Length: 338
Image (cartoon, rainbow, N blue to C red; front, side):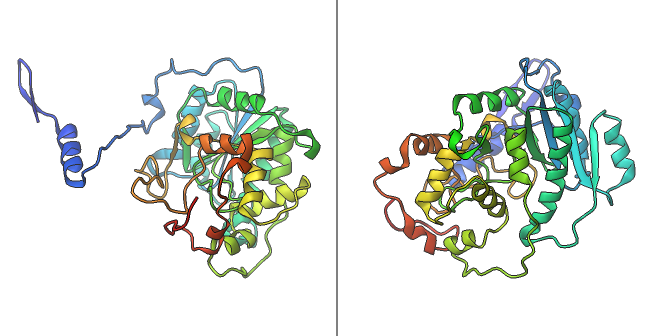
């Protein structure tokens, strides 16, 4: 495609490349450009005034490529000016890079790595997150937004959205929660019981303390045959955190699809990742919707807000609760009715 101006011919390579791909694959393509650097964020993009004290926790190993973690902090300083920012990482990280981060006037916690990582490194997550939440409690915040060093939010209205979400959908008081705990759809799976993402978590400070304050995983082996059901019962990764929390607030785990959906409806809130404009700099990072498919239904679907809302209204209204999927391997095409 050629566009003309008074001075020269200009080749529109972006549209040409897109048109070629659409022709070759027989599909429509959309794309989004997100700035890498804080300097490319418009300073007028500022969140609404929020009367709640919120801490943003960024936990995990530092990402120095493209100064990703440092620029994430600088972006948050622009977009979320009323929030406290806490970086929780490890004592063996580059001290000069840590000094650059401290120059941004953020709280930095350096943690000793646990001696045993736990299944799927869950003990690393527990250590860095819990210590940061404890510090947030000391700082007197009302809410905590837990994120990771390899992930970034771009929506300047994220804090208002999340606090309003918990006000619109209050918790049921009989379980002792102050508020629901909110999770994005990214890596929250519809057909894998109790599989709430650990990438981003938002909640009341005391609820977040209760969620993250859990014993380290001391197991060496997992009793699993590779099926979805046995994976959940083995409490792999993020499921270790969610099931421990549910038990602490008195939930009797039944390890069924129906029970998992009921816990989502009663105790949590699932929102679309696009509501925060989340960019995860890992695994298929170029795909805006990693698991969305139109040609087939697979059992690794993420749980979207509209589906969570349907569960909230009443999962028993569903004609079929596909418990048979629990015996299948993850990422398999769904063969029966749903």
